Length: 223
Image 1 (cartoon, rainbow, N blue to C red):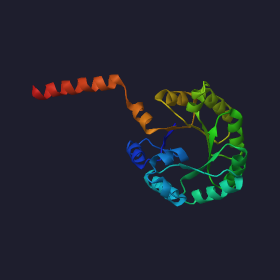
Image 2 (tube, rainbow, N blue to C red):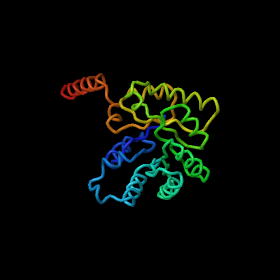
Image 3 (spheres, rainbow, N blue to C red):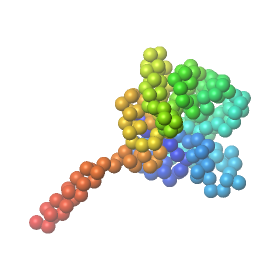
Image 4 (cartoon, one colour):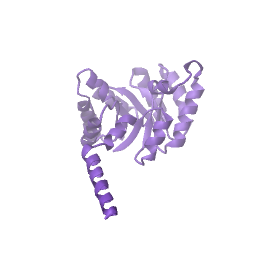
């Protein structure tokens, strides 16, 4: 399974990349908004420059989302984003207009991440439109008392049936168990918040075992 970090924070991206297990980055308008220090003066040019900085840190797919609603506008913006760096993947929402844009962009060699996916039929359409990644949002489904991982399992099964090359990218991950379940189902990618990446490392028995080892090592040095 590939590990992406779900953030626009450059410090978090650097820290995760230093671990040596990071394969890519996903961003969205909400994540970008969190790191903007001066919203009144933040322009689309600033956004593109920020994506370029991310691409300098991570050698892997970097998803940058369109912020328009019509297919024509999404295509124009998607082409601009794709020019930033060869690793940029254009995120388009799974709407009627988004689907049209995906088909056009993917047909012209631009990689697509179909985002805001909440049903297996949406995922099927994304694959047929040539998306490189499909992003089911498991946490948001859990929030409305629907089992998010059940959707991931459905999508993985459908893609295996028809040998689609679209990768299943599990998004809206809230805790380590989401990562475990995604891996057991066979999802291709998990995009994980920085906090949860840290939680993947933690176990009380590791901490207590290390303390014991260090105490015993200290005794040996003294004897």
